[in-house]
Structure formats: structure tokens, C-alpha cells
Length: 137
Ligand code: HEM
Image (tube, rainbow, N blue to C red; front, side):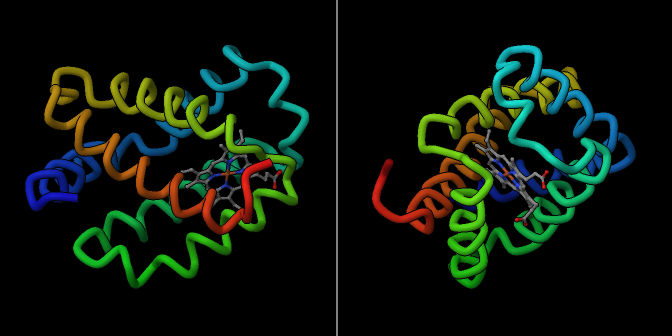
């Protein structure tokens, strides 16, 4: 991620902080509306799931300047996702729903630069998680 990406993600994450739970809720609602077949994979209720996702993203945003340090944890997260039934092809669906939820939460703050910055972050997270999942299924 470039320094511009890092600054844009950090600033927009702060903007979302007061409405992070609603944004997480929007994300799951969108994901399951668009892909109802994915719902069965999730065992925990979406509120608790949302908290885990937000905590993970909070850590990632705090570590943007040195994501390499988080790499082993992100790879392990990807390994656990294999156990949840997640496959490579699910990652773009997850990212699309996430970008949509971020765009709703940020409103006018969702500019082309902000979008590019979040795409860079999720691209990196997804690549690392998929690498941790082992050879593509
Ligand atoms: C950048 C991408 C992703 C991130 C950062 C992420 C993050 C997380 C986190 C932090 C957890 C909590 C459990 C744990 O730590 O093992 C989790 C669980 C889970 N994720 Fe993801 N995830 C991503 C992609 C996906 C994708 C693509 C899917 C499939 C559509 C998915 C489905 C699940 C499921 C089914 C669970 C377990 C739910 C449960 O316990 O009921 N995730 N994810």
C-alpha cells in the first residue's frame, strides 16, 4: 500500500468508527442478500461475527505501515477459513459486499481515491489469507 492509501484508509476508518457496527451489519445483510447460499457457512450470529471482523480490521488499520508483521496471523486466519468452507472464489464476493457497505457508511467520503485505498487493503488481506489456505481448491 502506498502512503496515500494508508492515509486514506486511516482517515475513513476514523470516520466510520461511530457507525462501525451498522456498517458491519450492512455488510452481512448485503452479502447474504446477494449470495444466500453463503449464509449456511456462518454458525455464529452476525452481531458477534461483526465484532470479530471489526476487531481484525481495527488491528489491520492500526498496522498499515507494517502489514508484514501481521502476515503470519493473516495466513493463519486464511487457514481457519478453509475449515469454515471458504474457497478462493468467495473472496471477491466478500470484497464486493465490503466495499458496498463502506460506500454506504462513508457517503460522500467514498471517493475514487478512498475506494482504491480500501481495494488495495482487501486485496492484500485476501491474497495473504488465500496463501495461508494452501494450494487453490
Ligand atoms: C479479507 C477477507 C476476510 C477477513 C478479513 C475475514 C475475517 C474473519 C474473522 C476475523 C473471523 C473470525 C473467526 C476467526 O478469527 O477465525 C472470520 C470468520 C468467518 N469468516 Fe471471514 N474473513 C474474510 C473473508 C471471508 C470470506 C471470503 C468468507 C466466505 C464467504 C468468510 C466467511 C467466514 C466464516 C464462515 C467465518 C466463521 C463464522 C462463524 O464462526 O460462524 N470470510 N472471518
